[in-house]
Amino acid sequence: MADQNKVLSFVETIKTTKSKKMKTIIISTITFISIFLISCNKKESKKVRYEKIKKIETVLKNSDDVEIVKISKSGFYGKYVGPEFTREGDVAHKFSNKTCKVVGRFMKKSFLSGNYLKVDFDNTKITTNGLDKKGKVEFVIFMPFLKTTKCESFTGLAHCGTWVNQNSFILDSRDQSLLSNLDKISVGPKEQGYFTTDGGYKEYWVQFKHKNYQSKCR
Image (cartoon, rainbow, N blue to C red; front, side):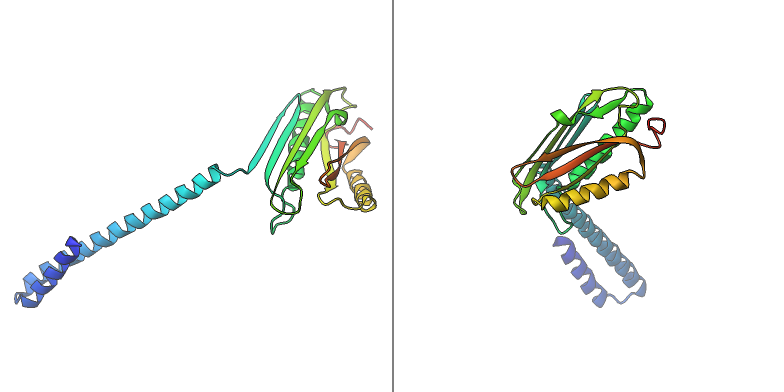
C-alpha cells in the first residue's frame, strides 16, 4: 500500500512539474516501481501455486490407496487398494494385467540366467474385499514360484476373468479364446489355474512357454 501511495504521489508531482527533463525522470521512476510491484505479485502468485501443489501432494500421501508389487525367486506378492471402477472401466481388475507383466518379465529374465521357474498354482492365494461395483476394493495376489527344469518351466503369464460374477459359460468361452491366442506365441503344454472369491471374482491364470525363449521345449 505504501508503494502504491508513492506512485500516486509521483503522478501528482508530474502534473505540477514544468521541466520536461524532470518529468522524464519521474516517469522512469514510476515505471520501475510498477515493474517491481508486478514482479512481487508474480512471486506471490507462484508461492500460492506452490502451496496448492504441496496440499495436493499431502492429500495423495495421506490417501488410503495402495499399489504394492514385490517379486523374487520365491514368488510374487501384489496388493491393490483403490477405486473398483472409474470412467476408465474396471481399473482395479487391471492390476491383473500388471501382475502378468511383472511375473512374465521376471520368469523370462530368470530363464535366461538359468533359474527355471513356474508359478505354484496349487498354493496361489487371491483375495478380494469390497467388491460391490462402487467405492474401493482390496485385491491381493500371492503367487509362489517352484524351481524346476528348463522345459518344465514357463516364461509367460496371462489371465482372463471377471469382477462381476460373469456367467461361467461366457467366461469359459473367453478362456478358450485366450488359450487359442496364446498358441500363436507359445510352444508345448500350458498350465492353468482357476480362482474365485465370495465377492464374485472369477479368473483363469495361464502360464505358458514363450516361443522366443523356449522354442526347444515343444
